[in-house]
Length: 132
Image (cartoon, rainbow, N blue to C red):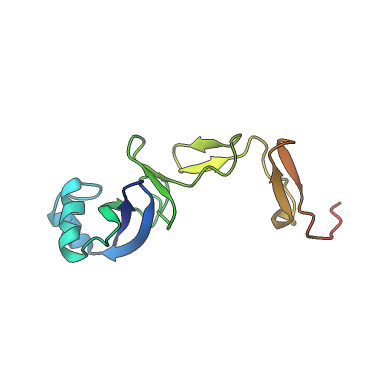
């Protein structure tokens, strides 16, 4: 199955839908403008959509599988997340932002939040846990 992300005028992903591999192969192949243009005939753009861009469910191309709210960076030819903090840097292979300090290696990872001022991870104050 082929997958396409509908992109708005700000390059934001509006939705992701499934298409036919055979249609992609018959119209230019993976990642081709021809396949994206042909897809509009099958699934018309919504009122906010400006184009379809193929995405890879298995993360084989264009960074990672597009999700609603992601941004398509046409210069890098990837889907990327919104940058969560100014200190985080973009991994141009995955389209994901990486913190300057790795998340602590603990079973309680979900209890940590990033503190931009400290430039480090800290325990989320809403959880009352002790980490050893």
